[in-house]
Image (cartoon, rainbow, N blue to C red; front, side):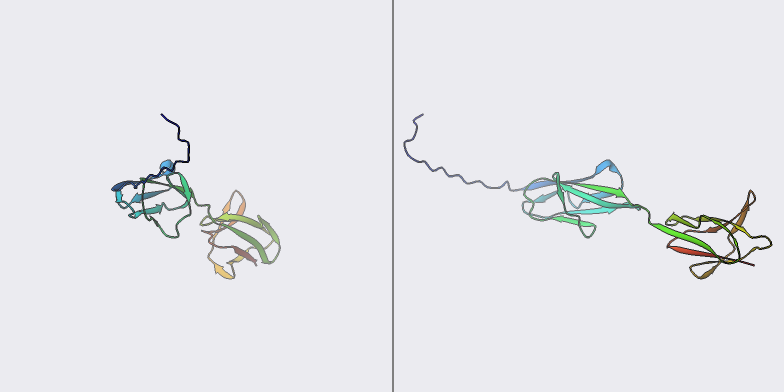
Length: 178
């Protein structure tokens, strides 16, 4: 080998690999939803399309394409345009946090004892309010958010309870005594 005595310019031309590229998808931890590639391969510079479907009670929290974090799609379809390498998409799902609501309780008139007077309840769950009336008084009616509520009282171990079923919003419970 003889060492050049002046600058040498080398040039080369590279052509991208033409043909088919593999397209695959998986769900991290195999729970929370499903992701499917529309086809197992795409042509050079073609589009890879994925359908991402969270299970009920889950949401898509992250996606990675070839181990690079990507922005979340606004729809359940994710498209990669101009494919020039094999593609593997991983979908990450997280369990939804149930909505929390505040249920407050008070007497409209009369005297008594309520516990709790305020509580936090998960969406769709029941709120239980223990009450004791003053001497000679009894519960006449219950309203929730200003609307009459059906007789939802029960007696248990000498205590009286009002049950507000399947709470779906912040609620004000008013007990009227007679």
